[in-house]
Image (cartoon, rainbow, N blue to C red):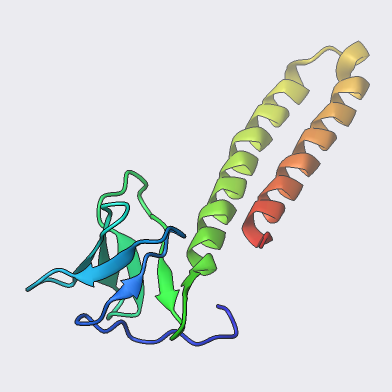
Length: 135
């Protein structure tokens, strides 16, 4: 999390839109939701009122923001988990393929393929780590 602490979102207050536009979030009566007057997006309070997330999202885990008292900050912990999962999936897919191909190639091509296999594994590991911990 950022050095700035997350504050509980007041469900009766208006806030700027976290999407970076000029819109304002206004509370929707009798709900824990906010509507933006510019982008027409609806956001809901989650995690005991400490995070804000878009209501309609096609992603299984959408973006979330937290309020610092002055501005919205993107919750990067959620993104790190998503990218780490992606990196581990790439590794889990590439490793069995490399092992299968390694055992079935003829001896003349095997040394070239070993170098290529090691490079693919290293790149997929580096890509997963980079995705997980980039800012």
